[in-house]
Amino acid sequence: MTIYLYQNDLPAGLNLGPVVAIDTETMGLDPRRDRLCLVQLSSGDGHAHLVQIARGQTSAPNLERLLTDPNTIKLFHFARFDIAALKQALGVLTAPVWCTKVAAKLVRTFTDRHGLKYLLQEMVGVDVSKQQQTSDWGSVTLSEAQKEYAASDVLYLHRLKDALQVCLVREDRVDLAQRCFDFLPTRSELDLMGWEEPNDLFHH
Image (cartoon, rainbow, N blue to C red):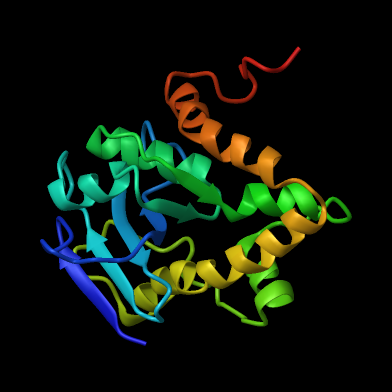
Protein backbone atom coordinates (compact mmCIF):
# COMPACT_ATOMS: atom_id res chain seq x y z
CA MET A 1 0.00 0.00 0.00
CA THR A 2 1.17 3.51 -0.86
CA ILE A 3 -0.39 6.67 0.54
CA TYR A 4 0.00 9.77 -1.64
CA LEU A 5 -0.53 13.14 0.03
CA TYR A 6 -1.33 16.25 -2.02
CA GLN A 7 -1.96 19.86 -1.09
CA ASN A 8 -5.15 21.65 -2.23
CA ASP A 9 -6.02 19.44 -5.23
CA LEU A 10 -5.46 16.19 -7.06
CA PRO A 11 -2.60 16.25 -9.58
CA ALA A 12 -3.65 16.84 -13.19
CA GLY A 13 -3.99 13.70 -15.26
CA LEU A 14 -4.50 11.28 -12.37
CA ASN A 15 -6.85 8.52 -13.54
CA LEU A 16 -8.62 6.67 -10.73
CA GLY A 17 -10.86 4.57 -12.95
CA PRO A 18 -14.63 4.31 -13.42
CA VAL A 19 -15.44 3.77 -9.72
CA VAL A 20 -13.61 5.91 -7.15
CA ALA A 21 -13.92 5.36 -3.41
CA ILE A 22 -14.09 8.70 -1.58
CA ASP A 23 -14.25 9.79 2.05
CA THR A 24 -13.82 13.10 3.84
CA GLU A 25 -12.47 14.31 7.16
CA THR A 26 -13.87 17.49 8.65
CA MET A 27 -13.49 19.50 11.85
CA GLY A 28 -16.82 18.17 13.10
CA LEU A 29 -20.16 16.69 12.10
CA ASP A 30 -21.98 19.82 10.87
CA PRO A 31 -20.83 20.60 7.30
CA ARG A 32 -22.31 24.10 7.53
CA ARG A 33 -20.09 24.89 10.50
CA ASP A 34 -17.17 22.46 10.38
CA ARG A 35 -14.76 22.89 7.51
CA LEU A 36 -13.55 20.22 5.13
CA CYS A 37 -9.94 19.26 5.90
CA LEU A 38 -9.12 16.14 3.91
CA VAL A 39 -10.48 14.16 0.95
CA GLN A 40 -9.38 10.56 0.53
CA LEU A 41 -9.68 8.63 -2.72
CA SER A 42 -8.83 5.17 -4.02
CA SER A 43 -9.34 3.33 -7.29
CA GLY A 44 -9.46 0.03 -5.43
CA ASP A 45 -5.88 -0.86 -6.35
CA GLY A 46 -4.62 -0.85 -2.75
CA HIS A 47 -3.31 2.72 -2.90
CA ALA A 48 -4.81 5.86 -1.39
CA HIS A 49 -4.66 9.48 -2.52
CA LEU A 50 -5.18 12.13 0.17
CA VAL A 51 -5.89 15.78 -0.60
CA GLN A 52 -5.47 18.32 2.18
CA ILE A 53 -7.90 21.21 1.85
CA ALA A 54 -6.60 24.48 3.30
CA ARG A 55 -8.62 26.69 5.60
CA GLY A 56 -10.56 29.14 3.42
CA GLN A 57 -10.02 27.15 0.24
CA THR A 58 -13.08 27.14 -2.03
CA SER A 59 -11.84 25.51 -5.21
CA ALA A 60 -10.00 22.36 -6.29
CA PRO A 61 -10.51 22.14 -10.08
CA ASN A 62 -9.16 18.62 -10.68
CA LEU A 63 -11.07 17.19 -7.74
CA GLU A 64 -14.24 19.04 -8.77
CA ARG A 65 -14.04 17.58 -12.29
CA LEU A 66 -13.89 14.10 -10.80
CA LEU A 67 -16.77 14.73 -8.39
CA THR A 68 -19.05 15.93 -11.18
CA ASP A 69 -17.93 13.54 -13.94
CA PRO A 70 -21.11 11.72 -15.06
CA ASN A 71 -19.06 8.72 -16.21
CA THR A 72 -17.36 8.14 -12.84
CA ILE A 73 -19.22 6.54 -9.95
CA LYS A 74 -18.22 8.04 -6.61
CA LEU A 75 -18.30 5.31 -3.95
CA PHE A 76 -18.91 6.36 -0.33
CA HIS A 77 -19.84 4.98 3.04
CA PHE A 78 -22.52 7.40 4.33
CA ALA A 79 -22.51 9.48 1.16
CA ARG A 80 -25.12 11.87 2.55
CA PHE A 81 -22.57 13.53 4.84
CA ASP A 82 -19.62 13.52 2.44
CA ILE A 83 -21.62 14.97 -0.45
CA ALA A 84 -22.79 17.79 1.84
CA ALA A 85 -19.27 18.49 3.10
CA LEU A 86 -17.90 18.64 -0.45
CA LYS A 87 -20.77 20.83 -1.64
CA GLN A 88 -20.33 23.25 1.26
CA ALA A 89 -16.56 23.52 0.74
CA LEU A 90 -16.21 23.45 -3.05
CA GLY A 91 -19.66 24.41 -4.32
CA VAL A 92 -20.16 21.33 -6.49
CA LEU A 93 -22.70 18.53 -6.15
CA THR A 94 -21.17 15.07 -6.35
CA ALA A 95 -22.87 12.60 -8.71
CA PRO A 96 -23.39 9.82 -9.61
CA VAL A 97 -22.83 8.04 -6.29
CA TRP A 98 -23.00 4.60 -4.68
CA CYS A 99 -23.31 4.31 -0.89
CA THR A 100 -22.32 1.19 1.04
CA LYS A 101 -24.23 2.34 4.14
CA VAL A 102 -27.50 2.69 2.23
CA ALA A 103 -26.92 -0.66 0.52
CA ALA A 104 -26.20 -2.32 3.88
CA LYS A 105 -29.40 -0.94 5.40
CA LEU A 106 -31.44 -2.21 2.45
CA VAL A 107 -30.21 -5.81 2.64
CA ARG A 108 -29.04 -6.28 6.24
CA THR A 109 -32.36 -5.65 7.97
CA PHE A 110 -31.53 -8.32 10.54
CA THR A 111 -29.13 -5.92 12.30
CA ASP A 112 -28.71 -2.25 13.14
CA ARG A 113 -24.93 -2.46 12.82
CA HIS A 114 -24.09 -0.69 9.58
CA GLY A 115 -20.85 1.10 10.54
CA LEU A 116 -17.91 0.75 8.19
CA LYS A 117 -15.69 -1.03 10.71
CA TYR A 118 -18.32 -3.67 11.41
CA LEU A 119 -19.20 -4.20 7.74
CA LEU A 120 -15.57 -4.58 6.73
CA GLN A 121 -15.00 -7.13 9.48
CA GLU A 122 -18.04 -9.23 8.62
CA MET A 123 -18.24 -8.93 4.83
CA VAL A 124 -14.64 -8.35 3.73
CA GLY A 125 -12.63 -9.90 6.56
CA VAL A 126 -10.65 -6.71 7.23
CA ASP A 127 -10.24 -5.09 10.64
CA VAL A 128 -9.63 -1.33 10.49
CA SER A 129 -8.76 0.92 13.42
CA LYS A 130 -11.01 3.87 14.30
CA GLN A 131 -8.58 5.31 16.86
CA GLN A 132 -7.89 8.49 14.85
CA GLN A 133 -11.54 9.17 14.02
CA THR A 134 -11.82 12.14 16.38
CA SER A 135 -8.33 13.58 15.94
CA ASP A 136 -7.57 17.14 14.76
CA TRP A 137 -7.90 16.96 10.98
CA GLY A 138 -7.27 20.69 10.67
CA SER A 139 -3.62 20.24 11.61
CA VAL A 140 -1.21 21.48 8.94
CA THR A 141 0.90 18.35 9.37
CA LEU A 142 -0.91 15.02 9.53
CA SER A 143 0.61 12.21 11.57
CA GLU A 144 1.36 8.84 10.01
CA ALA A 145 -1.46 7.38 12.13
CA GLN A 146 -3.90 9.94 10.74
CA LYS A 147 -2.85 9.22 7.16
CA GLU A 148 -3.18 5.48 7.67
CA TYR A 149 -6.61 5.89 9.26
CA ALA A 150 -7.80 8.16 6.45
CA ALA A 151 -6.54 5.71 3.83
CA SER A 152 -8.26 2.75 5.50
CA ASP A 153 -11.66 4.38 4.98
CA VAL A 154 -11.35 4.09 1.18
CA LEU A 155 -8.98 1.19 0.53
CA TYR A 156 -11.60 -1.54 0.98
CA LEU A 157 -14.80 0.13 -0.24
CA HIS A 158 -14.67 -1.51 -3.66
CA ARG A 159 -14.56 -4.97 -2.07
CA LEU A 160 -17.41 -4.04 0.27
CA LYS A 161 -19.46 -2.74 -2.68
CA ASP A 162 -18.98 -6.03 -4.50
CA ALA A 163 -20.13 -8.01 -1.46
CA LEU A 164 -23.18 -5.80 -0.96
CA GLN A 165 -24.05 -5.92 -4.65
CA VAL A 166 -24.37 -9.71 -4.38
CA CYS A 167 -26.87 -9.22 -1.53
CA LEU A 168 -28.81 -6.56 -3.45
CA VAL A 169 -29.17 -8.91 -6.42
CA ARG A 170 -30.17 -11.82 -4.18
CA GLU A 171 -32.85 -9.77 -2.42
CA ASP A 172 -34.07 -8.13 -5.66
CA ARG A 173 -33.31 -4.63 -4.40
CA VAL A 174 -30.83 -3.39 -7.02
CA ASP A 175 -33.28 -0.98 -8.63
CA LEU A 176 -34.49 0.33 -5.27
CA ALA A 177 -30.88 0.88 -4.17
CA GLN A 178 -30.07 2.78 -7.37
CA ARG A 179 -33.03 5.09 -6.88
CA CYS A 180 -31.84 5.77 -3.32
CA PHE A 181 -28.33 6.51 -4.59
CA ASP A 182 -29.71 8.87 -7.23
CA PHE A 183 -31.57 10.81 -4.54
CA LEU A 184 -28.59 11.21 -2.20
CA PRO A 185 -27.20 14.44 -3.74
CA THR A 186 -30.63 16.06 -3.28
CA ARG A 187 -30.86 14.70 0.26
CA SER A 188 -27.50 16.31 1.03
CA GLU A 189 -28.62 19.64 -0.41
CA LEU A 190 -31.71 19.54 1.80
CA ASP A 191 -29.47 18.96 4.83
CA LEU A 192 -27.38 22.01 3.97
CA MET A 193 -30.54 24.10 3.63
CA GLY A 194 -31.77 23.13 7.10
CA TRP A 195 -34.12 20.25 6.31
CA GLU A 196 -32.17 17.66 8.24
CA GLU A 197 -33.63 15.92 11.31
CA PRO A 198 -35.87 16.95 13.07
CA ASN A 199 -37.05 19.20 10.20
CA ASP A 200 -36.90 16.43 7.60
CA LEU A 201 -39.43 17.07 4.82
CA PHE A 202 -40.39 13.41 4.89
CA HIS A 203 -41.26 13.28 8.60
CA HIS A 204 -44.90 13.57 9.70
